[in-house]
Length: 443
Image (tube, rainbow, N blue to C red; front, side, top):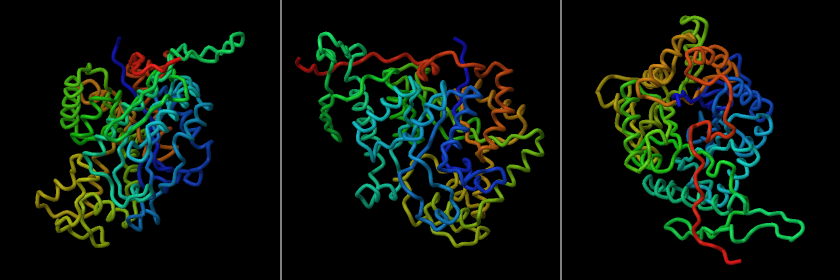
């Protein structure tokens, strides 16, 4: 089968992936709880024949800094509830929700995702995150977040328990035989009876086996622990945008980990984020990107940089940073920190410098042709199996990508022009996993 570039459509902030995207003249931030707003996003992605939409989430309000409330558009609907509604507003596109393994229980997640898979007829996906902020811990009975390594250890066991629960029922266990009065065949029901380090879960699940067997599992994490978890369990990995050589190295390294876990390299798709700013001309695209960057309030610039480097900073975004971190940020994230690396070089840098550098490093700015060139190069040179598209503004930015870039990718034969397979798992080239049967329940 010809290798095909995969596409996901990402939504996190109501106004777009940029923190101030909601300020753009085309944005509709006042509609952040309007189901029709989200349906338009999903229907646009389906019109572009995307493989899945991807709803990111967090279990907190970012109020550590004043700008989190004053300027940061971060209120959002609960993703599984939203995706259940979108399942009946769409027909083919995958439906991926971010769910934390740190602040949920396996039975809840197994049941919710299985239900979504049934409702959508095999289109559900779970983006596994371990969470990372103390703000989340304080919403669930703690003051501090779990240790980084412990989060991933718990996450690995969490996945195993969820899969055991999904395997509770054989596909043909439900008889619903009116004449005999038998609703289910007890010989085809199994319990997990899981007793592990972090979870004790008997089961069985009170939802039959999902149409996909195991709904598709996404995982995001750039640290060594995150990559190990992904290599062992994930079907697809949501990765950070990196310069080409770095992206190729990450891709090759993660595929090696996949093989080390006894899997084939193609069993795990690597999907970096793509943050496009597209227009009819290069000049127009550059001006649009500059306009979005300039809309970022100084308080967000300073506080975003302060948080990322673990240091309190003065309010002036143009004041040079004397780098002496006063907070250990390793437990939040152990992914490579490019801002810290820049400061350690000794160069005189300001928060505005670092914020702007991060912005320009993360975006792909240009015409449909130039963005498609970049996408094709990365796809064909071992840097990506596809991309999760994060438009900086909604709905304009994403619709511009679908209207301008997608036809160019289709013309080059890189992406599909129509849906063929029924389930998301099939669309990603993954087989339906065989059911594993642990303990048999006596009739």
